[in-house]
Image (cartoon, one colour):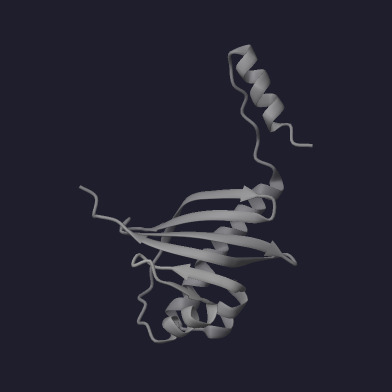
Length: 139
């Protein structure tokens, strides 16, 4: 039973707030997703199709800033022909909904944002969609 809504309601009635400790499973899942980011970036930089096939679900779709959407096979083909320099991301948000995660990452320069959805299957996270956006440099 999820007690968070009840505690939130009680806090509102009492005029205060209560901090809830993050459940151990949630912390572990978030750590797994942060690790997935690193493995995924390495697979792209090193053009490793086998690793990408392990990360990307068979139903994976990627949407680019142009609006073009491609499937897993086309995405892997695109990675194999791209020169991707090593990069790091910050995890702006990781939201968990059962065995589904919404992750919003940004490059360190904050010029590219990656939003992806992953589903936990058989103990592993598999990415089912990703959307890229570009932003203006910070002023």
